[in-house]
Length: 86
Image (tube, rainbow, N blue to C red; front, top):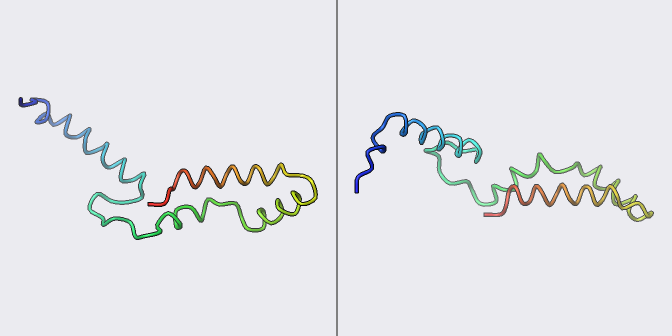
C-alpha cells in the first residue's frame, strides 16, 4: 500500500532534519565513513576527570574518605555508558 505522506515535502524535510540531528549527535556527517576502531576512546577522553583528580581521590580513599572516589567512579561509568565500545 502506498503511503501518500512519503511524498509530502514537509514529511521529507522533517525526516532530513531528524537524520541530520542523529548524525550530529554521533559526531559524523551523513556521508562520512564509519568511525575508526576505538573511536570511543577519543569521545571519552575529554570528559574523564583529570588524572590529578583521580589520584587525589585515590589518596583520600586510602585514608578513609571514599566520597570523591565514588563520585569519580560514577562519572567514569556514565561516560563509558554514553560512549560504549563498538
